Image 1 (cartoon, chains in turn red, brown):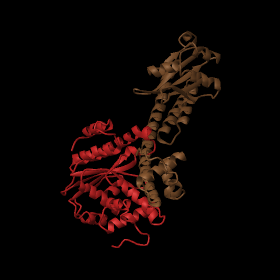
Image 2: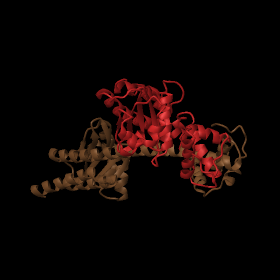
Image 3: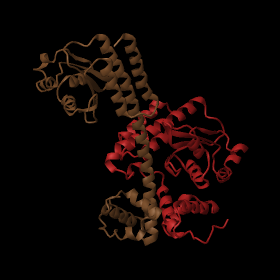
Image 4: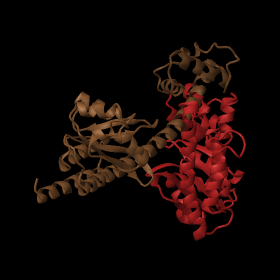
Amino acid sequence: MGDLSRLRAALAAALRADVGGPTTATTVAEVASRALPGDGAAVTLMTPDAQRHTLAATDEVITAVEQAQHIVGDGPSLDAFTAARPVLVPDLSDAAWQAAWPGLTDRLAGEPVAALFAFPMRLGVTVIGMVLCYRRDTGELDREELAFALGAADVLAAALTQVGEDNTLLDGQDGAWLGDGVPGSHAVHQATGMSMVQLGGVTSAVAFARLRAHAFAHGRTLEDVSADIVARRLVLQADDPDPP
Amino acid sequence: MTTPDREKQLVRAFVGLSDTLVSDYDITDLLQDLVEHCAELLRADAAGILLVDPRGGLRVMASTSEHTRLLELFQQQANEGPCVDCVSSGEPVSVPDLTERAEQWPRFVPAAAEQDFRAVDAVPMRLRDEIIGAMNLFRTRTGAMPDADLGVARALADVATIGILSERAIHHRSVLVTQLEGALSSRLIVEQAKGILSASGATDMDHAFRSLRAYARRTQSRLSQVAAQLADGTLTAAQVLSAGDVPATDRSR
């Protein structure tokens, strides 16, 4: 936990590439995710049509939460994104949350996650993504943590656009400055493209839905399923809906 | 013009300029309103605005007349004249008699005289340390502008400056958001296109990407454009893959 001025200084150092390597949105998000309250945090960007791209995740637990939200297409992060306000879940086992995101809480049953806190990254009135923090134990964030996380999300949003602005002239519209994001995130999009063809010319929305369904039905992550598709160990079949 | 009339006009001018702060407006309209209000209220025979462009030069943005010679006179001040001095100092420059400055501005003074201008004032458009340009008020008679008039000119220029700066800030932010969203979307759709090509042509991702890039270069389009066309079916994988037979050294990604 730090204060906002320390986070700003850390992000400024990342923007000057003082942290080593080329400055990308991924490196900036990694710096910020480590400063956030709780036991771990993730930073995810969203396209206007709500496609996710997770830039950074501090540990396997928060990675699992992000993957679960991606598969079920639901959860506090998406709610924070669409409502443009924080979603605070001090006790995930509470019946209200179970009812709000039934698929998600089921999938997270084996993970040591007791509380989740999602904050929108805002630029003016536009939400460009969200940060998500988790706790192993139940309980609210205290006032200071809450104020810090709220501010941090907006400071990070500004820093991410700064990386974009610094790099626009360098790599044009290609978006390489985004960096690689968390491992496996590109494979999901590649596997979606492959499945568009293999399912007989369906749209990316349909292909991605089938990908999610397969991962959900087999209790696997999107990243694992995608890696199999890209490596041609798995082909989703048009006439073969995934068995439960 | 009688005093009550002038006051009414002044109020109208201020209300008109501050309206631009709350509603959708065009910066050209704002500046045009400003020069017209100023010329009328301050009894100037011509008025114009020069703004600092992104490269630091001065550009004519509005003028009470589109007369070519007048515009040339304004634009000439990009090099010398009261506007340059005003922008660099951030303070008003008053010239009650242009003939006295003939040595200082050897090109500007004769050009002004040619159009019968005898006196000129330049008022800065600034907010705190930021100077974004200057407003020019030309008169065909010599003599200083009354202090009260100068105050009015500065006040109107201040309101317009705030309007311009806030518009720029909003525009800047929305450009940043658009860039970020565009970069993300194009990144995702390029990965997806690699998948489409890879599955269609039974090639690996690396070869798929090289084909995509070779096709984009050949057709002089952006990668993300080609990728989007692949996704919506306006372009077939075969068309793109046929462009992919490129040297294996071309692997910068």
